[in-house]
Structure formats: C-alpha cells, structure tokens
Image (cartoon, rainbow, N blue to C red; front, side, top):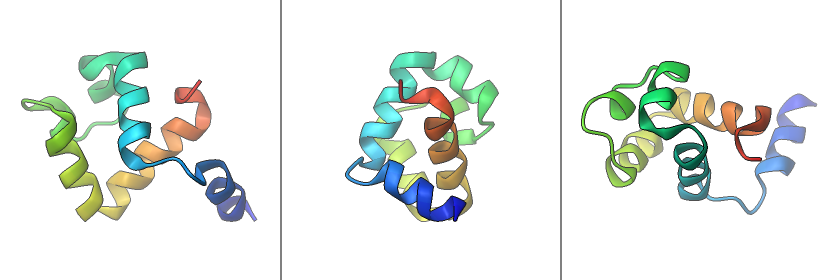
Length: 73
C-alpha cells in the first residue's frame, strides 16, 4: 500500500522537476550529504544527474523518497 501511495504522490511529477526542486531547496552540497551519490558530489549538474538516476533505480528511489518526505515543499 505504501508503494501505491508514493506512486500517487509522484503522479505527474517528472524526475527533472523533482531534482530541480531538491537542488533549489538544498543546493548540491547539502543534497550530496543527504543522498550520498557521486552524481551530486563530483561536478554536479541536472543533466548528468538525470542520466545517472534514469539508469539506476535504487538511486532514483532514494531521490524520490527524499522528495516525498518533504523535499518537494
């Protein structure tokens, strides 16, 4: 049931929108400490992060979970 609830919450929100929102709220440096992914640490950009997150389901889930916990407010 939790997965269904998360899917509803993310319905219509693109990964790019999620990432832009999190970067705006936290900045790359803080985001890299919250979600320790190399794409946020080493020369971060929206384009390179999107490429990595689209290919890596476990990393995408971490970012989506952060957004659902309130990072998208």
